[in-house]
Structures are given as structure tokens and as C-alpha cells.
Length: 135
Length: 246
Image (cartoon, rainbow over all chains, first blue to last red; front, side):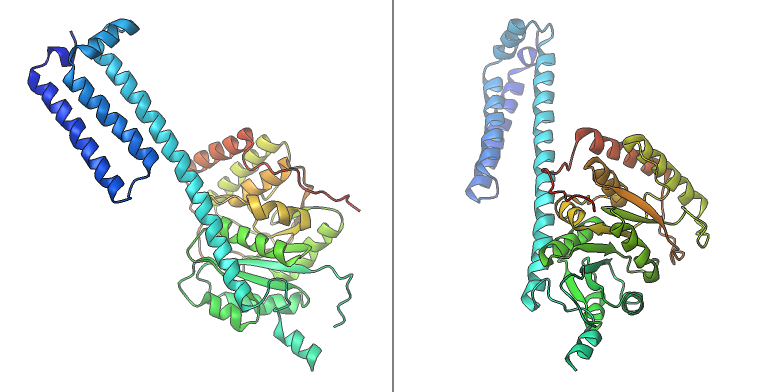
């Protein structure tokens, strides 16, 4: 007997409602353009999964039997953990890439600012030496 | 001074973070010791008058919009040198630790065929440079790390007094490491890339403030990080254009 299947109907309702709230929150962020569509789809899928699991109590037990998992909640934890690890790995990758890009941008902005004042490669160093040359 | 077209242009790259006090002296000394060298000061998000002070001295100034750390500032310097077509670059600290009078020694080693020259404090008894015990241990650990990861022996892996030829300038313009211990990582990257790296003894002044907070755990972390960098082949360059060493 799984946790979900054994639980009172109230737990299913809570799970389903949590899924719906999650989805509403995501849609709100998308509408405000604060969340890229690729992430929105990801978390919408999570919301859908919550709603489905909440609405059909036997589903998890059925999936556990099909995959040979003795204790159904184990399956839930396994899938959930794997999913979160993958998401966090992906975010670390994106963060590293962004850090690299902002660093390059900062360097380029600084170099361009210098180019505005004179061109790189010009002999701007040591004005005393230049003075001697021109004098 | 007659500057013939055959003259090799050299630029001193000086990363500076809030160095308004030490910088004027360093620039003046540099001008006196090596009159024909060009200079670029990379102000690494300084909040004081570092950039103004450098401009007043008449040198090139690049101002980063925010603090990138020494690695980012140096990479900016390499980009500057690459765009401007300088054939040689020297890295000099803004805090006066490096004696500009020693730059000639670094350049001699470049002329002798090296791609990257490291000015080392220990290779000879040129003015015994003393370091604290913790720092000494840290430097020892880095020596061992570099030997394990590259198979080469260096006495002063973290020295920031270095000279670079055009190939290394081009290489580091894209790949200079940005994390702490950039100098050790840069050395390893250059070795793996097949550049000829030599050490040459220089005298160095003692550092004013004790900034070396090398805790053991931190060293272990950075050793592992460097090992991962080396093993994974990170920062490997796309076949650099190498010139035959004369």
C-alpha cells in the first residue's frame, strides 16, 4: 500500500491543489515575462504531475508494480530526486555560462571605453618621451 | 629616441584594484627603469582614484565596470595587448612588490626563446626573499601540485612577475583563468599547451600587507580544482599559431 493510496482523500485533494497553485504561479511569471518558456514548460509539467498523482490515487501503485519497486513511495522519491539533480546540474551549467559571458562583456565594455578615448595600439604612454620627440 | 620599425614593442600590464597610493610611484619607477615600455593599467572596478592617477601619469587606462578579480583584469590586459599588436607583455603588480629594474632580466629570457618567463624569488640568492611560515607551506604545496600535474619543477609557481611573448598573449586573451590562484593555473595551462616556460631569478620586495590567507583546507580545495581543470582538459585552446623559436 502506498502512502498516497493509503492516505485519506484529503491528501489527494491537497496534492492536486498544490499542483494547480504551482501551475497558476508559473503562468503568472510567464505572463510577466519573468520566466523563460523553457523553464515554464518544465515546471508546468511538474504541476501536471502533481495534479495527476493527486487525482488518481492508484496510479503510483500501478507504476511501482510495473517497475518492480516494492514500496511505491520509493519510486516517487527516486524519480523526484533524479529530476531535481538534473535540474540543478542544468542550472549550474547555465550559471557558469552566464558568468563567463558577463565577464567577457565587462572586459569588452572596458576596452571599448578605452577605444573611445584613443585607439588601442597608439603610443599614449609616457608623454614626457613624446614631448621630447615633438619638441 | 629613434624608434625603428624593427624595435619590438613591449607593454607592461598592471592590474590595479584601489591602488591610488602605490600606483604613481610604480609608474614613475617603471618609466625610469624601462623608458621605452608602453603601459596599460587595468583598474579592476576600483572605487578610489586609481584610474585618474594612472591617466595623470599618461599611461593607457582600461576601467572595468566592476571587480572581476586579478584573473579577469589580466585577461583584459592580454586582450588590450593583442588588439594593439604588442609583441611582448610584462605583468607587473601595482603594489610595488615588483622591481621594474628586473624587467630587463625577464625580457632577456624571452629573447632567448622562451614563450613565458616567470620571475622567481627563490631560484638564486638574489636578495633573500622571506615569507611567513603559512605562506611558505602554501607555496611548497603549490610546487608539489604543479610537479604532480605537469611533471615539471618550478620553484615559484605563484609569482605574478611574468613576461609573455605574442603567442602566449593571444592564448591568454581567451583563456586566462579567473579564479583564485590564477597564476598557478595559468602556468599549468601554458605548459599543457606546449609553450616553453622558464623561470628566471629576480629580486622582489617584501609585500607591504599580509594578504596571504592560505588556509590548509582552501589549499586542498584549490589543488583538487586544479587537478580537475588539468584532467578535464578545460581551457584547451584551438591550435595556436606557433612560430619557430629562433
